[in-house]
Amino acid sequence: MTWVNVLPNGRLVLPASLRRSLGVEKGGQIVAELVDGEVRLSTPDAALDRARAIFRQYVPAGMDIGSEIISDRRNENAQDLAAGASKDGAS
Image (cartoon, rainbow, N blue to C red; front, side, top):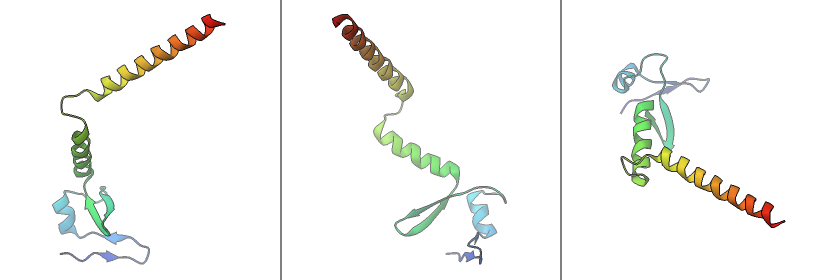
């Protein structure tokens, strides 16, 4: 366990050993999130990997979700156009 100092202005001082472990350079970025009352620090790449893993629980690997969404929108648009045309013809 490593102690981290909080400066009077609220900034945290992350020790060099932790920055090295995370692969973070001075001036780099880390992601901070509150999880069960604790602050979790990780790299943006690690956070993205976690998000991808959550996404894959709902969307199987190999599925092209972008194409699925575009197809759905085109079908909805075609239905909207057909509904509008039938309303115009019914007048």
